[in-house]
Length: 217
Image (cartoon, rainbow, N blue to C red):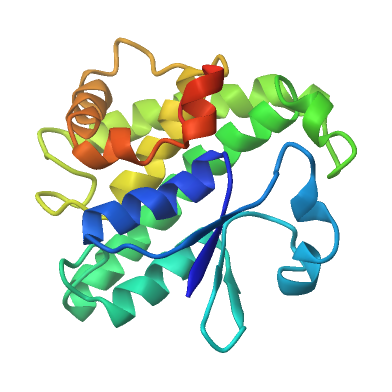
């Protein structure tokens, strides 16, 4: 088993997940800035061309960040970062979808269509005119989430989960591309500060990102 790895918040999610699990697997680096992931032989494994991908011992490939983490959780259930019971797993999926649909996908597309436009204009259908609106939705939904978190320690209550990792990696990336958390969102900012104290938050950063000054990758 090996992880096809690169710069970026999505590969970081899997790296952080592995660290929280206490798992070590080999990494194979893919040059995402050079678009190595958008051409063969990478696309022969992952036609979507996105990173990361998990290559299993039999040569099969699992793409999509959450699918990779779910597979790793199934084969290494302790400590549970998705859930140990059907109810915990359902609760996690609920929050994961809320976070992805309302916040993280809008944040990433706002970046791709603005700050990251020169990278992505030849890789996907970009809508630069949509970027301000998408960034505005992110802030609206963070305010919505701020009210839902209340005094909870983590997104799913007192359970630290993959949902926390997904949101943290997106928001930390956002801090470096002009999409900072509103300082008035006290609950989200307190949660973010707790996330930053975790060893995995630092150790999951890609060395190339740290060397170049890129935040959150």
